[in-house]
Amino acid sequence: MTDVVADLSDYNKAAIELAAGLTTLRTTRRASQNEDPSLDDLLPANHRVAAGVRDEWQRMGERHVSEALEARAEAHGLSFEHLAQTIGTVIHGVRLADDLSDALIAFIRDALLERKVIFFRDQHLTEDQQVTFGRRFGQLDAFPFGRPGANPFILEINHGPKSPGLENGWHTDVTWMEQPSLGSIAQCVVVPPTGGDTLFADSYAALAGLPSAVREQIDQLHGVNDYRVFVHGEPDEIVEQFKERIPFGVSHPLVRTHPETGIEALYIHGSFLRHDSLHDPATGEALEPKASRKLVATLLQQHTRPEYHCRFRWTEGSMAFWDNRAAQHYAASDYFPHRRVLRRVTVSGDRPTR
Ligand SMILES: [Fe+2]
Image 1 (cartoon, helix red, strand yellow):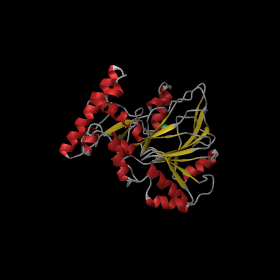
Image 2 (cartoon, protein in one colour):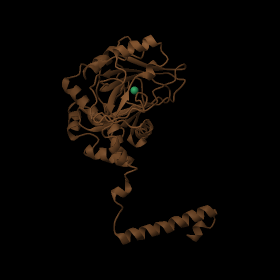
Image 3 (cartoon, rainbow, N blue to C red):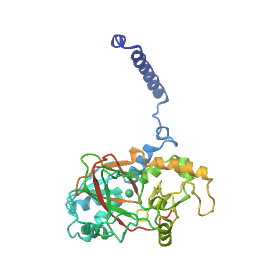
Image 4 (cartoon, rainbow, N blue to C red):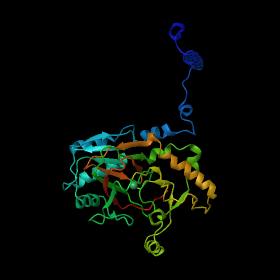
C-alpha cells in the first residue's frame, strides 16, 4: 500500500488508507455478527424509494408482463420492448390504422393496465383515425381549454418559437373533472431535432415508496381540484360560463384505487389541486392550511424521483397511450425554440375512489 500511495497527494493517501481500514472493520464486524443487513436496514421507513420499485416489481410477479400477456402477444405476432422495470413498453408489430379485432383491442387494453404506459412507432394516423382508435376504448372527452383540431375530440399541443412547452410539470391529466379521463392517447406529428421527450412515472410505485408515516397520513385524505389556471385572467363572464357548465372544485382522494386493477396509486396534480384543501371527507376534518401545504409539497416530490420513471423519445408517427389512473407524465421543454406538435385524445374515465 505504501508504494502505491507514495506519489499521491495527502488527501488521496488519507482517502485510500482510511477506506482500507473502514472496509476491514466492517468486514470483521459483519463476520462476528454472522449476518447481512436486513432489508429494513437497507430500506428504512423514511427513505423508501427503492422499496417502492421493489414492492411494485414483486406485485407484478417479478416480470415485466404476465405470462398470459406474453402468450397473447406471441399469438398476435407482436413483441415487447420494455423501457423500465415497472413502467413503459413499446409494442412492435401492430398497425393501428387497420380495422383491429376485438381481441387485439383487449390485448392493448390489458398491456396498458400491466405497463401503465404503452407506445407504438410509425403509425402516422390521421385525426379521424386517431379518434376511431381512441373510441375503441370508450367514450372520448373533448378539452374545453385548448385549440381543437379539425375533429373536436383532438387536442393539438403545438409549441414553437413563440410558444415554449408548458407541460413540463409532473401531472396526471384533467383532475379538475369530476370523472377524469381514463387515459390519453397522443401522437407526435412534428418532432424537434433533439429533445421533447415525455417522461412517465409509476404512481403505484410512487405510493409504495412513500415514507411509512406519510403513507399512513394520506390514507383517507382528499383534496379539492379545479381549473382556475386555465381561466386565469379571462373576463368574468367567460369564467362564469365555464363554472355554470363544468363543476369548479371537485374532491378527489390522494390514494386512488384503480377501478380495473384494484391497485392503489398516489393521485395528485400540483396545478389543479388547492394546496390548502386537504381534508378527510368521512370525518369532515380539514388539515390546517399550513400543514396541508407542507404535506402537498412532500407528495409532489414523489413522482419526480427518476427511480419511478421511463422516458420516451418521440419520432414522427409515434404514439403513447398512458393510464391516467396509474401514471403521471412530464413533457420535457428542452427544445425551444424548435417546433414540437402532438395530437391527443382522451378516453372518458370514472370518479376516483379510495
Ligand atoms: Fe398531460
